[in-house]
Amino acid sequence: METLIDIGLLIFLIIIAVAVVRSRDLFTAAMLFAIYSLLSAALFTVLDAGDVALTEAAVGAGISTILVLALLALVPRQEAPPTRSNWPALAIVVITGAVLIYATADFPEFGRADNPIQTHVAPYYINETYNDMGVPNIVAAVLASYRSIDTLGEGFVILTAGLAVYSLLATRRRRPQRRKESRE
Amino acid sequence: MRENGILRIVARFLIPLIMLFALYIQFHGEYSPGGGFQAGVVFAAAWILFVLIYGLDAALDVIPERAMYVLMLVGVMLYCAVGIAGVLMGGHFLEYTPLLDDPKAAQQFGIITVEFGIGITVATVVMLIFTLFVRRRELLTDSEEQG
Image 1 (cartoon, rainbow over the protein chains, first blue to last red):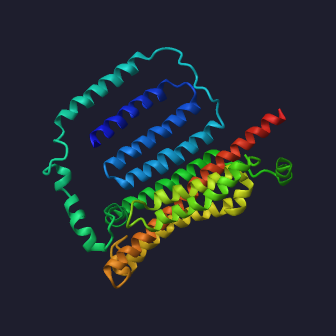
Image 2 (cartoon, rainbow over the protein chains, first blue to last red; image 1 turned 180 degrees about the horizontal axis):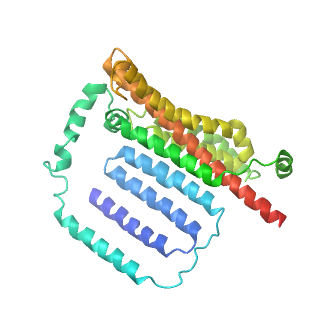
């Protein structure tokens, strides 16, 4: 049953990815991207990755879409038609994709007990998190305590993003009498 | 969208619920999925819904732009302050155990505080970015009207 859900979601993902590329209407593309994120969130939920699913749904499907729509209010709605076919780009994409698919043959078998991901630090986190800090959610413990400096860095990334957008978009405050006019 | 009655009523009902859910994600993050990033984003989403229904001026009366600039720095500084407090009380940077007597309670205190800092920063940065976009849009409309 879970396999069927996985296959169904992945097929939807492919359909929507193609639809995003084919759509010339940027508004449609933005909404399709939101659906794409929502489907990814559903896939993460099937994989029992609650934190990632929540992030994907809130950030990917929610805020990214809102910010893209806010941006679309400033720019033309239609994508400019392509002037000519770009064959070198297609060749690079096809070759890279083929190489990546070829590389998956070297992956360890999915879900085996002696895979590196099961034998590195994961067992320590799973066994000791509750003893160390009494926090049942291992993800929260890893993010905020074991690897806290990483999260601090992420906080600074967000702050930098805010400052960058401010320096690009900030406008001089509008004069008060103009504001009254626009309110009427 | 100010004149649409259904939207106004639904939003008036939904905005507090979304904000409450954001706080739940924030402070229940160490028991269930969630944390500062998601909570901040959800909280900002509720505020953006408020902007869409009631307009930017009304929303900036609730949370002024100046408060956003201050709060987005306060969030990161709160995170750093917890780290430095660990150093001052005889541990490493961002080590929470020296903060309180009981090591588990100290860890939980540290986790909740730094996640709260992240939540403040994320929420205010998203609000600020949206505000700046709306300002640009207003500027564009003004210049179109004038000429």
